[in-house]
Image (cartoon, rainbow over all chains, first blue to last red; front, side, top):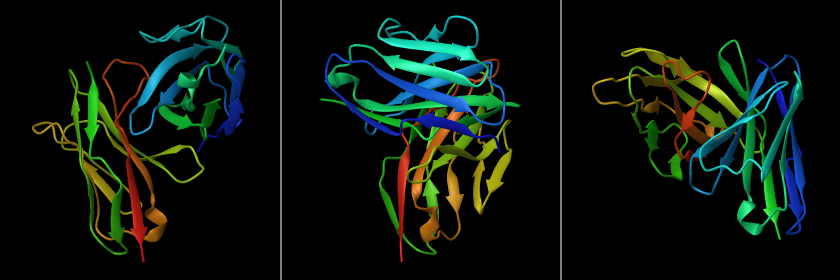
Length: 113
Length: 113
């Protein structure tokens, strides 16, 4: 199947700093990618839909100025958590769809201290 | 709105035991239903799916039947192995909803010798 690579797998940052997470489709092109967030013992919650060459579509309640999404090419989407705070600590997962099937990255564990 | 409810874990079983992980959903229309598996350190992978009522998805010895009358999609396996230890996510994609997925909370399965 198709491969989606997410980097980094783990990151620890200080409060107030920004963190960038990359999501790459390695062997296919993805005009749309999805970013999810997972809290402990809770569902994966869709944060936003990343659209190549245009603005991302954010789900209700997600701060677009806080979670900046850039989808500059057909194989790369980035999520930047700006001015991170401890409450942003979470597991972030991206996915891309090929022929109707969703393929997921390995996830990024973000810890803000 | 759409939602997915699955049993809380962790579920701990002995090798060769029978597995059931319950999943029920709420959705309008006729969604497609999925089970994803996440092995330690890896991304989510599609395990099986069903797109209409009474369909049975199956893969690697796992099965799930789309039950419209009970709005359920329970995951079963007759004889689990240690290698099945992972987190299992039930998910739905609503008809006409593009590629957006709604996930359950995930159920961790531990299989012991």
